[in-house]
Length: 525
Image (cartoon, rainbow, N blue to C red; front, side, top):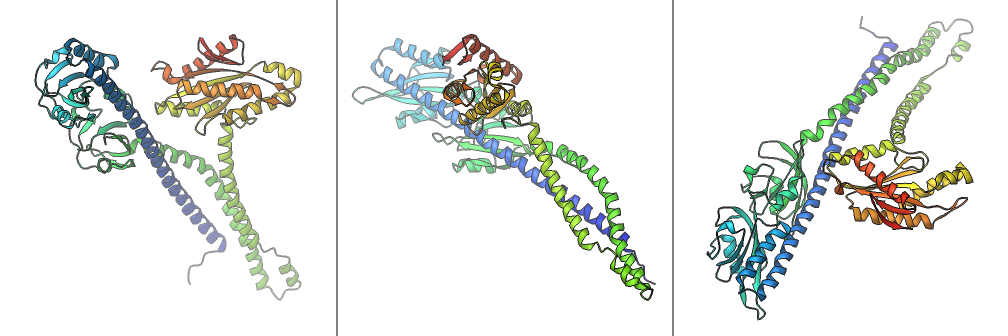
């Protein structure tokens, strides 16, 4: 006799199998989505970071060229004065600390002045590739890396010197020693991260101009898809493997004037490190729902099977008196059970939306829709982890208690909502706007200098002062501004916020309706 299983057990087995498969599929899909999201976010951040540093480096090089061009104009009028040449070489090297050494060379390649004098190149004739290239091309020039006469691996930036009649006199140039402390390493070296992320700079011939490992400076990089793209003059992002065999997520940008490529990269393992904990959290949050579902499934199986049992019993006694009426009274639950199943799925979807809404509510001020203290702390924590510069504007409504006492709390709430609206109108999409509590507000401006933050603060102050609010009339605000770039390098976000409060206190002490910066007042209303 073939083995037969009753309907209740069959439904339980099918339901359990379906739940396990769905749960496993959900976990797998969540893992894939979150993994790709982390990778895409890192690639985008590294590319933006590389573009930012490429712009800073390009500005630095253009500034050096302008310095040399200005100096060349001065030297053309005093090229025969040896003391003037020496003084100008010393000024160029010492004024901005951009160059490790400065040379003034005549049209025959003989050094007329040098700084520092310890190089002992005075009156010598240069034969290095950079010096010869400058003499040959007679134009503003940034050379590829080469070994100098003094045995240093250098980049040479030069500008020709012409007299008033257009005769070529020589050139003035500055050297950047790649294997010594230089302005390029100072510009890029502060961006080294402890999680294995780092920056490097490579030129068109694949030689490394900057690398956190000093031993690799001047070395030629091997096969690498990122460097291949830089050689082609492309900027972008992508996955690569470094010389140590580590999978990296890189963003890269090319400098227009030199073709150098700046690469910011982070180990893939560091990027995906939070994923394991995320999946564990997802599992532990899902487990109670799964455990709760087991008895529910058993109960549904019993509920579904009961009508069939009753129908089977009625079919076996069809000849009994009144059986037709009894069968007519049997409830058939198939459609209702399907609806319950669909309702359960809809309920789970609503639960996920509710969880998402609760998470948003935790970081949002209900009155204004701005971020609350938790939202502000989350933004500051993320920026501090990225070593990202930002400015803070602390805002306080002047005499707000009098508004509440005179006009009522409903009008006070309207004033707060109006200020939040004006803050949005005066800010960028990337800015984080916060209500710190009561009538205290905070604006967090990523990548904004102190001057930009002061402009934003003054614009907001003026907009508030001009806005008439029904029931309250005109109100004013006091603002305090501070920038993380103006603080000590070891300042944390808490101390920067305290600095903003101190600046706000300055504004209040100076009569309110103005913008304060620590002990200085920016502007009165």
